[in-house]
Image (cartoon, rainbow, N blue to C red):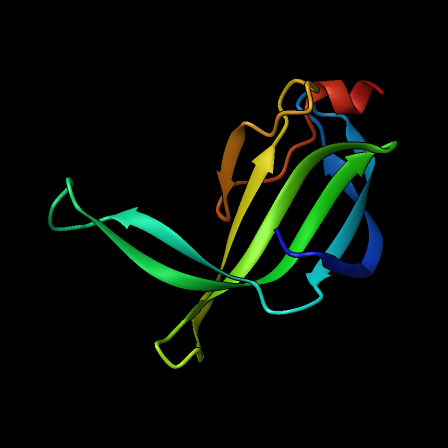
Length: 123
């Protein structure tokens, strides 16, 4: 993991919890201090037993918390061509701690809504 810059932006958001209650969450955005390029592997659409890969450049890591209890990190990255030119839309995925054990075990895609887990909303 690259060393992040100082917090790029701090804001707050009202986000619905699993119980339906709306809670105030802190949102901190971090940008890498230098280029960080990584490889994502994915199943081939032609052959389920083979994998393709693509190079990605990290753009932003966003931390979501309620009362200093971090419940979600989202990662934004952009695809790179062979010549390291940015291509296509930014890829976003998130890792969520569902039960407050400090393990971010749930993978969310950019299509999924962010919901504050019950343990974080109760704090």
